[in-house]
Every structure is written in structure tokens, then in C-alpha cells.
Amino acid sequence: FAERIVETGDNGQVVMFSADDTSEKIITALACAKVLVDQKRLMNRIATPEEWDLVEHGIAHIESLPIYIDESSSPTIDTMYYRCAMLNAQKPVRLAGMDYMELIRHDKIRDDLQKVEASASGAKGVGRTLGFPFLMLSQLRKDVDNRADKWPTAADVRYAGEAEADKLLLILRPEHYIARGDSIDCEERDREGVALINVAKNKRGDVGLVRLAFKKEYARFTDLQEVPLDY
Image (cartoon, rainbow, N blue to C red):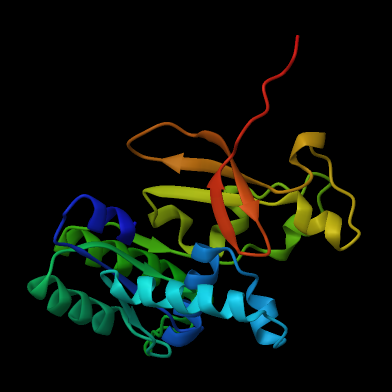
């Protein structure tokens, strides 16, 4: 998205709140995904000089993009609003996101369900007030692992503010379960290198299934190149 901003000549920026990782780790992960280098090879110190060069160029590219990363641990909705408002006054924010919504802090709320509902409604309010979409990432309930098809539903994000969301996207990667030896009911074509995106809720558009390619070694989603069927 940040690359598209640059390509179109837009003067905007992307804001990311990360309570789960440092900006350095995030930038490195984005760079590896961009230049197609397995990040594990860097962590295990077995990357080739050529791979290190690619990653360094990738990092320089990511750092040149209009992305602001806030790595405050357990931010509150108020601090997220003031940060976005300050940045928005300097350069229009086109998209904001939070990598783990359960880590948003609510000092006066004790109930877990009420906390995530407050997080979802609060983030939605930030985006609505300042004029940009706010993307929240959340984990699914563990119950999904007990199903034959492993397919997540809206009920699996009941503790993730689903009721407040304008759009809800659920991701299933059959390859994840197959790699750990679990059985899963899915089409043969989806068993490797495919991410199934279920647009389960969309207040202003269509719902349905979108198939994407997923390169797990790079943690990278791309368009799926379908092989035409020979009839």
C-alpha cells in the first residue's frame, strides 16, 4: 500500500502500531518479503553475501517508503488517536493498522470481551474521525483446529470485535495444517502455496472467497497464477 502511494504520487503515509515487535524486525521482515530472501537464513546466519546484499537494498527501499511504525508496548486508543492526528496534520494518513489488537490497553475495563469490543470500536472511531481505514489483526479461537475443514468463521473472532468491524477477512492456509501432520478437508489445488481469504463481512460490498498465493519462506501474499484447465 505504501508503494502504491509513492507510485501514484500521493502525498500520504501509512501508520502501523506494533505492540508485538520492534520497528527493526518489522522492516527486516518487509525487506525479506520484498526481495524474496528467507528471513530464517538471516536468523540462522547461513545467508549468502548475495542474500545479505539483497536484504540491505530491501531495507533501504522500505525505509524510503512513507511508513511510520510506532512500537509502543500496549498502547491505548487515546495514544493511538493522538499519534495519528499528529501525523495526519503533517502528511495525510491513508491507512493505519495494529498488529495485535488484544494488546491495546484499557485501564478501566477488566472483562476481556469488553476490552476487545472497546479496542475495535475505538480504532474504528480513530479512522472515522481522521478519515482513513484502520486495519486490526487478531488471532482466532483455538476451536477452529478441531474441525475437519479447519475453516474459520465469524464466531471464531467473537472476542476480536467482529461486531464492530465494517469488513471481516478470515485467512486459511491448508499448508499450515498439512505441514504439522493434521488432516484437513480441502481441494487438492489448495494444499500447498495457497491462502484462502474468506471475506465474511463487508458492509459496502460483496462477500465470498478469494484465493491468493502464499510464499511461506518469505511470508508474502501475491496474486495466484492459475494454470488453465485443458478440456
